[in-house]
Each structure stands twice: as C-alpha cells, then as structure tokens.
Image (tube, rainbow, N blue to C red; front, top):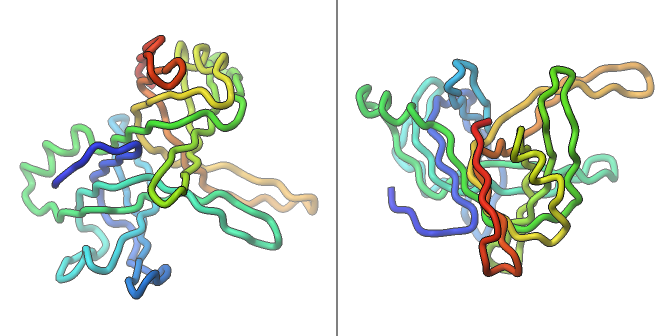
Length: 224
C-alpha cells in the first residue's frame, strides 16, 4: 500500500464482521459501511466501523469472515438525533487489500492496529483514577484536514502519559501514536431504562508536545 505523510494515518488489519451497507453518496460516488473485528495482543478484540468508497472494492470479496488490511484516516462527523448532536467516528478507508496468504496475515497481525495523529487540544483534559488505581486522562484532539475541515478525536492516556496530559491546555499542539479501541458502556435514562452503547477512542502509547507549534518540548512514551 502506498502511504503519504499526513496528520491522520490509520492502519488496521482484521476480519470483516458485518455485511456492507450503503451509507451515502457524494458527487456521484457511493460509500458503504461495515464493521471490522481487529484483534488485540491481549486476545480480546476491537470492533471498528469502516467507511469505504465503492471504487475501492470493485471485484473484491468483503464477505463476513474475510481478512483485510485497511489504510486510511479516523474521521468524525456529527449525527443529529432528536435535536441532539452526537459525535460519530469511523475509519475512512483510502486503500484496502484482501489478505488471503496465511503467512502474510500472521505477520501483519503482530501489529494489527496503529494510528498517528497530529493535532491540537480542543477541550481541557480530564484526569481521573480508576477503582483499581490506574491513572487516566481523557483528551479531545482536533486534527485538521483538507477543505478547512477538522476531525475531533477522543483520546485516552494512561499512567505517566496521563499525568503529563493533565497539564495540557486548549490549543496545545501534540502528536500521538496508539491504537483505536472500542469500549462498551451503559447509559441510564430517567425512566430507569439501561442501554448498552459502544464508544470509540484512541488509546495513546506515545506522544510529543510542541511549544509554539515548532519546537519539541517533551516526549512521553508508555505502553497502555
């Protein structure tokens, strides 16, 4: 796959989990959605939504259970439901490759989920600790793309990275590396109804902080 330097780069390898469904059409080009099951090194999986152009999948078998390698970007958009805006994330595919060779697949699955983002803090980080004492900081990163658009990506930092991120300010420029993860949570409504939903976020493994957008001030790295 050909790659070019960008502020938002994603590479995921996994198994097609759901049939393709038509999403939308733009400038005469159709786009489809499906879910991709991406393994973690811990033997669990992340189920990630993928959006792909019809021109990339001509004569390609994307039936359930087939394995693919996808290169693209993690994009966000707002979905309006009942006058409420909700941030929706999707892996926007710019290239895709069917993986049929078992040896190649096993090699690629050693690092099946990688993302790089170059963006700006657009919401004050929230630092917290889990009941088990793990330190966490929640971030929202704005990543610019073409045509004066931006993607807003929720990120989560752990341990030493979390303590570092707690001090970041809105507008600070950072670069980060990690993986995209899916996480189930339960939302409780006023009528006591409970709904299970899925959130998507970037789990940070390494980050760089830039002062004045030019000079690198610090470098943090920690496995999540």
